[in-house]
Image 1: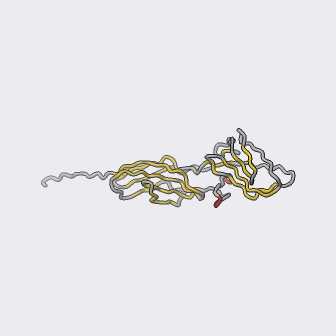
Image 2: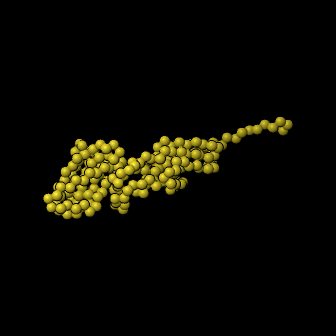
Image 3: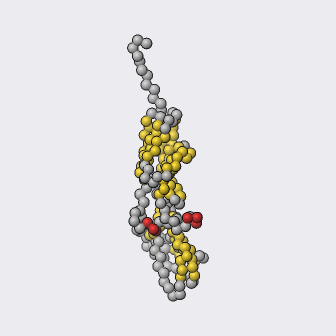
Length: 187
């Protein structure tokens, strides 16, 4: 049992096969004996998305090795920045960095999307806790909210995945309409 991002063993992770279970040691190793049969095996630990293997079969006098790499919660956006330009708010952020290459170990624990690879699909933009936009482009890193009245606003952005939504990164902005007084000679 390993952390996908760090490669370190995960202690006290729970591995379940039907009614049978085991807990990983301080190095992430575990051992579990089960009778012959077909099982759905789940590896889980707080703070990680469960890894699920369906239809795992055991045969007579067979030792099976299953190595699980758990992915932490859905990665959020980082470094959310807001710039106010008159009545418009321009937001920019860094997209979550996801592992490249052998990402087959990143699996959903949701029963409706079991064994689905987790892919970034876009972003959700919130203003004062209300969803104002969903961007279905995982490469997007900017959004502009136009023509806002004066006031304070809290913007939040979450990364959207095919299996769920990350926590939100937020920023507070103030929109103030600056009126420039012009003095015209002779009036």
